[in-house]
Amino acid sequence: MSNFSQFLCSILTFCITLSYLYLSSTSKTKTIMNYPPKFFYWLPRILCILSIIFISSSAFEAFSTDENFMVQIGEFALHLILPIVLLFLLIVSWKKELLGGIIFMILGLGFSPYVFKMNYNLDHSLWSSLGTIMTITIPLFIVGVLFLVSYFKKKKKTE
Image (cartoon, rainbow, N blue to C red):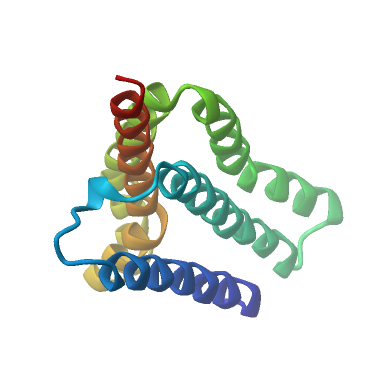
């Protein structure tokens, strides 16, 4: 793992830890649905942006080979397809939270077997494959759940 990837992992871990501390430090009588709507508005968006940055950081591996520069650029562009699609979905999800939540949950669950199989075929390590799923596809599922929570929270507020 490169230093940039480790830096992004530490930022993501820090944000999740802060979120947990915020949620656990409030009154014990509060449930998760009683938190301010702004919290649930920004949390999925920030986590999605961090996930996109983390996934994008793998594109720089294309420049670590001894290939021709044009081949490296091609591999770099190929690695950026998923982050560009995720960025487009984030833009759609920004206003249509229900649709975005469903799509991100489907992506998170749908890509998990593919990512697991691909990673397992590379190194034949169960734990490495599970770790890859935990860092790539599970955050997308969590973003989807948070978009749905934000949608229902906003809908409940308008009623």
